Length: 231
Ligand SMILES: Nc1nc2c(ncn2[C@@H]2O[C@H](COP(=O)(O)OP(=O)(O)OP(=O)(O)O)[C@@H](O)[C@H]2O)c(=O)[nH]1
Image 1 (tube, helix red, strand yellow):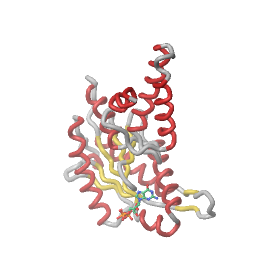
Image 2 (spheres, protein in one colour):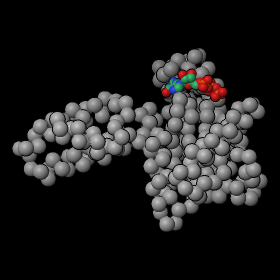
Image 3 (cartoon, protein in one colour):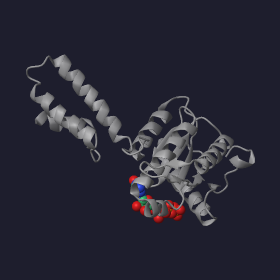
Image 4 (cartoon, protein in one colour):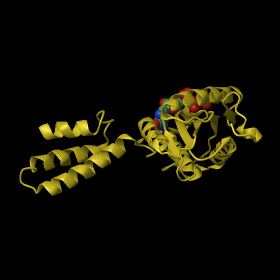
């Protein structure tokens, strides 16, 4: 049991809400640690390393969509900015419009199907090397790591228009759902600590987009990327 406690510490900061797979893994781990005295140390070490990797990856992801969560995004940004050739990043905050209505009208499982579809669009639309995450109920984040303001603005507009064009099938229902999203875009930022500030900028822009009628892209104050100059 002492080993189990040490193991949880390795996972750094404890575990998020565990779902079935991870609960199974913990039971498996405790079982393995009880065999630790009779199994060859190399096998025990390999199993533990694998479990540590799995748990670390689970702690960094949203269980519904498998996109990065806040912690996963923050870790990925730390890694990106530690590289000598790190490029500045742009943060896009993507918020589904009137999502509560979808839940209220078609049920929570329909809401979940919409969230999964938007996650799929995000994953498919950002470039390889960019980051995609879900940071709250119906709030998603895309972070462009190797582009300028024009590229970030194009990505935001492409995301908005692909989300709008989706017909979303809900299991067990004949309805095809549609949704739209409002997107706030931050200025570029160049350090892992600056991403909370970028979130605030994008959030303020998003708020303006919601007030202006939704289903639109809004830029942080003074952002010129959409006009052709780097932001
Ligand atoms: N299905 C589902 N719903 C969720 C989840 N997390 C949060 N929600 C719901 O998301 C809804 C968010 O509603 P609001 O914050 O009012 O936002 P909205 O209706 O999208 O309105 P606007 O953003 O102003 O367009 C709430 O009804 C939450 O219950 C989830 O994981 N699954």
